[in-house]
Length: 170
Image (cartoon, rainbow, N blue to C red; front, side, top):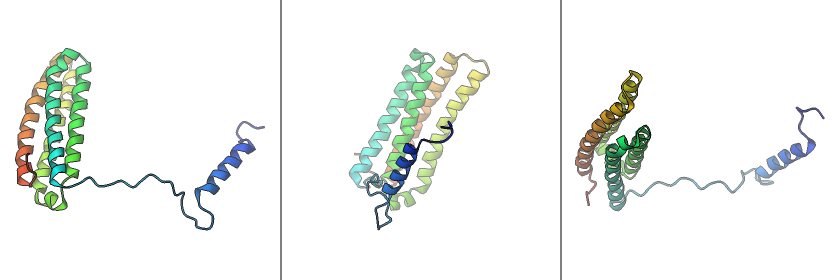
């Protein structure tokens, strides 16, 4: 047998799998597909919970910034991961907003999005500092100082904007 040809058994299995893909007579796809994604709830309780998750995640970012220098080179990765978790929590929060809230708070949400993008720039600054010869410890300390302070300012704006778009604090 030539090494580039498949054995007849593999061909039969492939044909069998293709035949099983559709239900005879109906031409419908295999009925056991994953369930469709569902929309998160948009009730006040879900919104408060998601907003609380964002607030907690800012705390985790700030905690990572405080402890990062003691982890040496691994501290950067920890801070980066916590920042990405903050982004995820914020996206989850936005998913709980109603279309009316998204429309009424479009400017506030755009500013919060831009704020996270600005915070992320501090990671680029860290990379540039290290690339320019600054010690990783010094660059990490600068990153953590800026990110910790800036995330606190972002959180203040987030809290104000929650009130403006009708998400209760508690």
